[in-house]
Image (cartoon, rainbow, N blue to C red):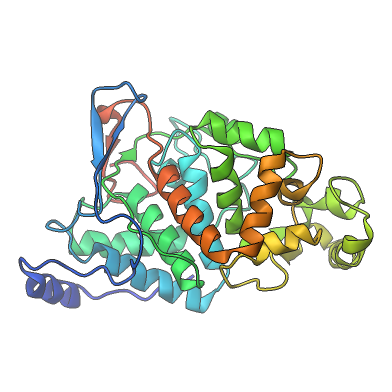
Length: 353
């Protein structure tokens, strides 16, 4: 993926022109108005913390969000699937020891990173886009904007570029100096998870069942390999084989048939695959959820409040947008452990300084 670069001359000129004026965040039209939230490193009771807020880079890197947004827009224009990929990177980062950019670290002789974890291997993508964004930020304001914040901003901008809601991203995170393959394998929900497991995975990191249902709506964009939903097309699992979804499942069987079937990709939302909307929930009510973990949300065998939320979001796109943005903010506050001494602002997102 080749992302257009912002020239150093342009950046320097723009920074000079910005002066002491307050920059307008053109990609944020809703959400909080810059309130700070203190997150503790090493747990909620930790005394040391870092303050997240909308204005962390106002003076030190006023064009940070504009640089990220321009690169994200360029990447998605070239590859619409990249919107879902960048959004997923942020999710997979935050669910493993907090939002600290650990998912971006390559393996080293000292530790095995998270990229080869079962949920991530041959699945996560968009690293080159993040590299390009970080290179531009280092030209504009060296060692200022963390890789973890790049993921948070890029996730929001990917949603907006796909027609979804916006929110004021809280920034000020630091980057970890290590990663955890074990935590990536254990913390991230599997595509075959049932409702109880999904709720527990979210509860384990401090998020609610409502957050789980709202954030699952991210599957309104993106694609998945046949191996992730093989249980659905085998006729096993929630809602499989019912009259209302049999045609859908048969189309998936045709897609995944043959020797190359395991690597074939299907749209998570067949109706509006590149648009961030509430069609995902409408699909679930029709039995057309791609992943078993998706269709489980609408199953009568699942939690009643979860199924009720699916119906609410299916009938009210504005409610979904509001709750999704609020849940993204809550997920973005998940704090890494290890203390401030274990963090930094990486110059290169793939390696520690």
